[in-house]
Image (cartoon, rainbow over all chains, first blue to last red; front, side):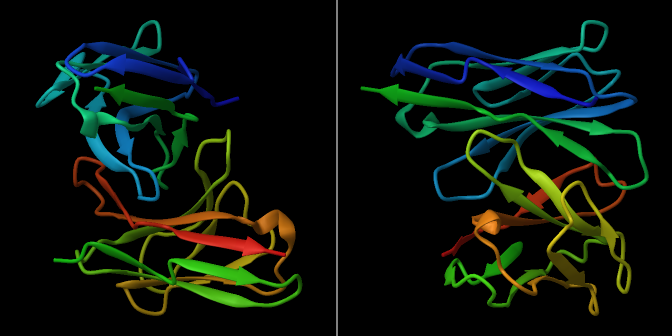
Length: 113
Length: 113
């Protein structure tokens, strides 16, 4: 069964600190892995997309890593800001003609001053 | 450039009523999708379309119908609403071969009483 599991479910950090979010998946055949940021009441917004051959990708203060052998990914946020408070969703794409995606339940990050 | 626009943003229905959710994209994307997001669960695919005039079932299609008469529009219909359809609905679009990027709308919060 294709699954995407994220940890922790929620996280509270102080402004300026770093944090790392985890994602494990069982989706096969694997196509790509994405991290999305979802603000409360808004749709998900793409942060990074990685294919099988990529093991790291950065977008500003966000750096995603991918280990396709162990089927694990992480999202590292550097020097957190209050605006980073959101849900972060790991999404894994399956190699089908339908661009099929499997979504994790997300990690709720709260950055406090 | 509006991206993906969903209407309405909020709606309350009585059990048994019908309604249509509209999704419009101005990026000339071939693929369009309807997802639902429920507490504690990842986004789940309801229906999708790989081009004008085509539709296909996703993971949770029961109780919903869709139409893609124009490339830029993707409609999601509920013929007889049930309380189990209370959810937040997201539309997304993507362009095949565009680094697998999805653009999401801001969502429709539907409550069925």
